[in-house]
Amino acid sequence: MKEVQYIINDIKNGNIKPIYFLAGEETFFIDQISNYIEENLLPQEAKGFDQTIVYGLDVQLPDLLMQARQFPMIGERQLIIIKEAQHLFKKKADTDALENYLQQPPETTVLVFNYKYKKLDKRKKVYKLIAKQGIYFESKKLYERDTINWIVTTLKTMGHNIDMKSAQMLIDFLGTDLSKIYNELQKLDIIVDKDTPITPEIIEQHIGISKDYNNFELKSAVAAGDYLKAQRIARYFAANPKEHPLVVSISLLYNFFRDLYIYHVLDDKSPNAVAKALNINPYFVKEYQTAAKKYMMKKITKNMGYLKDADLKSKGVGAGSMQEKDILNELLFKLMH
Image (tube, rainbow, N blue to C red):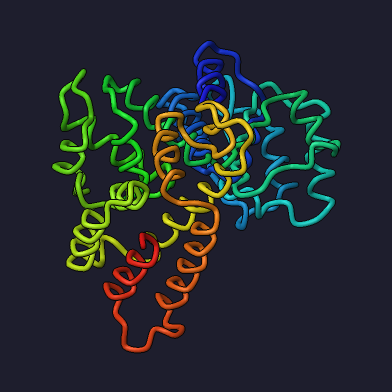
């Protein structure tokens, strides 16, 4: 994410602000900035004296701001990091206290607020003061398309290339939790030689995702109308149920047919327009072009109904004695016939 790197580079260049208010849903980027500041702002010998890390539930904001107004003990500045800061603002008086502090924040203190899962109202005075005196960073949840691009960019900075199919495999297996994905990317970076492309074979070998039997391949088989391939994948899933929960497969297929429905009603079906409308990478547009020839609007509507019914069965509603493998097999037959 460019804004994250901009903030970090700014700190590297010595342009240090008195307050960093890190808000939003995507906690990975909040932690990335906060951890960088924690590790790099103060010299090691000063951290025991001038670095304070607290949690929002454990402190009162007025007390914290009183400490922030004090001079550092041995260095030229002190650092105060507030984790889980979303719990810190308990009443209006807390916001008033921060507004008062920000009228003239001391140059010798750096405050870092980790305000996770929430954001400030940009119409309010406290936001305007933070933006004026320091950095207000809002970390938005990434869509799947953005997550793929982030994987590609992150691996490139590590010295590796990855194709779109391989990046999608990681998302299908790991979800869009960036912290979880980043841990796996770090593992690949250690194991795989620099300048070596990250392929499905490498992912299968080192992360444990089968390159042939995964939800990405299941969706591709359904999109292409390849019932035999879909059955083979379903049998693999049945033999490895913990790694391939039914609810994940149903959700992925439902999203695919929902997007295919949207594809049919688009006036502009050029690759870039489709990618933007469906919020996918242009690489995957061809799959929708192929599927649209097989699945017309009436069939798509029926399939979405089948998927909702399978979802209920997977949760025990109307399933009778059916096991997950039976539900998936029945679903695939209905979807593709």
